[in-house]
Image (tube, helix red, strand yellow):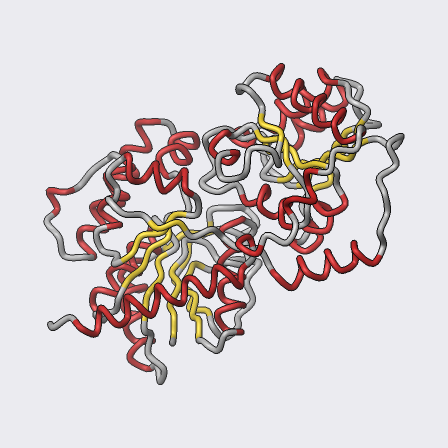
Length: 407
């Protein structure tokens, strides 16, 4: 089959969703299918087969991120490209909730193609945190107005409520997916849809197997006298709570080191805080690294610290660390609820003091020989091959159901 994936950012730009989409493409193609990704341009994206680039306005100084700049031109470009395709699309998979998602829904409707939709973002929280309530309502009013125009529905359904907007998007899809049980519940609780399927974003099998094989070839018992190695990974900005992590680490004062991977607008603040707290010899800012390198760092670490609260729709770093046998200190109880109760350390509340307690407890347990990470290895449901096989069944079912419809 030929799958068209519509996404709001180029998959080669930095981000967990982008990484997931590239893995989906890799394993769908390995299974013998065609994948075309429709997205804005990016300075990180090379011109290659399998990508349709939409007219784009940059939203970052380095041109890594952008949004669709001309909806009318995008429509014409898509329809012309589709008419020229030898192997037509069989299904449209929407994996963006803004301009590209809207354009994808309109395109699928015009071409009478079945639609499945994965909602990766908690739009209400993400956008409100960035823009504030007033601008958020205005943005969703604009988006809903554009959506209703694209799918030929009455304009009186225009809304400034993010959840109602997501409901408008969901009404066009045969199947709606969420990347975790807790986000699926959020969507259903807010009446976005009555039925949301859970489809975890998978992790690259090839890299995981290689890392685990290397680890097995060098069996080493952890030196109980060595400092515990804590890893933190994510965008270094407010919602991820990197500053709270540094403060909690200082308060716990554990026999451990902490390495923070990622970039963001709080990077300089984090560096300043580390210096102010006298932690330069124990806490290190490592910047951004490639996906495979990050997985190796997870495997080398004793524990991952996950510090955002109520923001993640899946929490990919926790899954990536789990796949290589590294447990986590979890601030987000929603993520903790996706796993067995005894494989991670869960922070009791959002306070810095509570996080410090959990850091101290995890370090003490690890130094005492705790091996809970061993129970996380070989969990096949974390890997992309399993997610791909599951998704292919859904694709086949919506294609068959769509063929049975009469127009």
